[in-house]
Image (cartoon, rainbow, N blue to C red; front, side, top):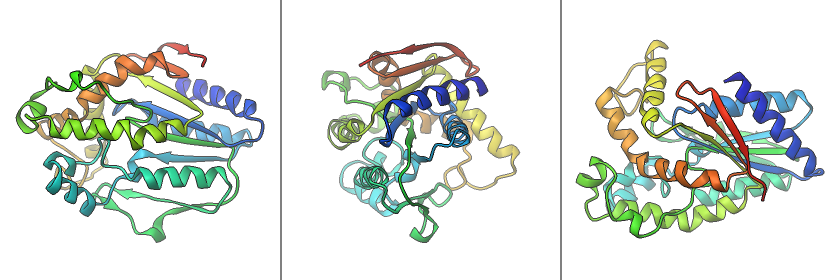
Length: 275
């Protein structure tokens, strides 16, 4: 992935220079396991080496609290208890964070503890002070747009077929995309997509991450530790199948930069799109 990092760092640096002193906000979208988090940290390091101030935001740190998601599970649909899909993030907090960073305010960036499945105490949040040159927002559905009502009618997997037969969950997710998440997308100056060759590789990539956690010696239950067995992992990935397929089909036509990856996360080609 090092060549991916170098390519993206150079591209973001070029766009930052064109911004002429204004804070640049770049969205980095990529399916689970695509390497976007690693790439983002490498881009940050490279840009800082070049004298740029960079703030990195992860969509994963802006999940709703456990109690908030429990409320959604009780009042809207049980599947909303599982973090990840649109509708399980605090978009208002994320928008406020981005806008505060752009204005050079002192901003506390929230942190989410996946082990406890809840937000960390505020005193543990990182403090960013002063104007930053580049804000990078990374996440699996950053920049995603809503589907048509017709596209929601047929379930895409057993999770939707058995646990969302009326389409309540996927309908809620889609309305969130058309509402608050659209406002978030409009905050981005540029959108970059790390495109998997297909959804089929996402399970393998995510499984590699789980195996890495096991090798690191982490232990615990399938949810609290973040380590899942194969069955739990397959169900977990099913939550993201619909939107991941939609992103891979729809986003390349409008993203500012598409980096097409092969199954080993190597660059197959890049496709800059001017708008």
